[in-house]
Image (cartoon, rainbow, N blue to C red):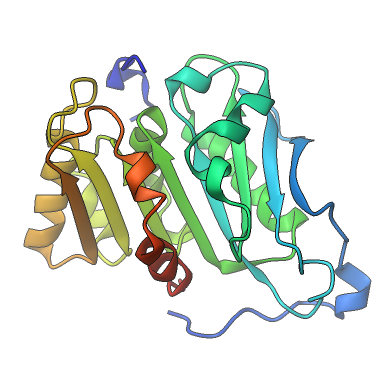
Length: 239
C-alpha cells in the first residue's frame, strides 16, 4: 500500500438496547452471509460489503453488535467485490456480529461522509447502537483515529491498525476502549503514528491496549484479525 498525505484529512450502558417499536413492526430480514449493497447517503462512498450472521433472521428480538471496517488505499475504487479478500471481510464468516465495509471510491476517507454512513447503517439494520465498533487498516486506521476523536460518542470501541493518531486529539477518547496494532518496522506508516497517541492515552489513564509486532512491515492486520482475543474484547464493549 502507498501512504497518502495525512494532511488530506479534515483533520456504559451494560444492557443491550431495546427496540423502540414491536419487533414484528420493524424487523427487516436480510440476505445471510456477505453481500454487496448500495448506500443512499452519497459522498465518496457508493457501495459497501454487508455481512449478516446465520441466525440474524431468526433472532428477531436481539440487536446485534455492528462492526464498521475501513480499508486501506489499495482498495480505493468502484469494485467493492475486492474487499471480500481483504483483512476482516476475508475472515468474518461465522463471527457473531453484523459487519459493514464501505468502499471509498476516490481520494481519502472523509469523516463527515462516514458519519452519514454510520447513521444510515444504524437505522437500516437490527443492530445495537450501544455496541458499534470501528476498525480499519493503514488509510483506514488513520481514518479510525480521526473519526473517533471527532465523534467519540458513536462508538463502543475502536481498533486502529497501522494508523496514525495525534496526541493532542486523544483526550476526546480517553474513556473509549481502544486496541491499536502496528509493526515496529512498518516502512509505510511510521510506528510512531500509533506509539504517540497510545502513550498520550496511557498518560491520561485512558482505556487503551496496544500490540506492537517487532516485524511484519506494513501488515499488522493479518495477525490482528486472526487473534481470537480481539473478538472477545470487541464483543465485551458497550457504550
